[in-house]
Image (cartoon, rainbow, N blue to C red; front, side, top):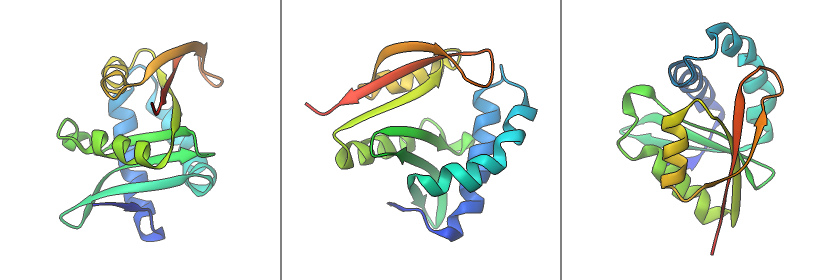
Length: 143
């Protein structure tokens, strides 16, 4: 079941974010992610519309949309990836918003493939603001 996040979900969402981020970005130091933890929890999460995928009473993934267009995060518990949770969250967001954009590390090839399979296309490439890695800007628009 996909539903809007509640305050009780925040610790679990942050656990998923930290673990999946570290696993999904081995090319970036873990210290970088730990250093961003409080910003994500206290600034970014409260400023986004976040939806969780809960199965059998356990949150397994989430998607956050900022300003009705930017997917600021899509993370699934690492051990649960590949079973459709991410796709379900993307499809849920597509039903709510007519156009979506996101930024993904170019080196995160599995994420780039996933977003392409969900209908996103690369529209730009840029350097990340706070590290030396390149990002793809990807977009999807309802037809």
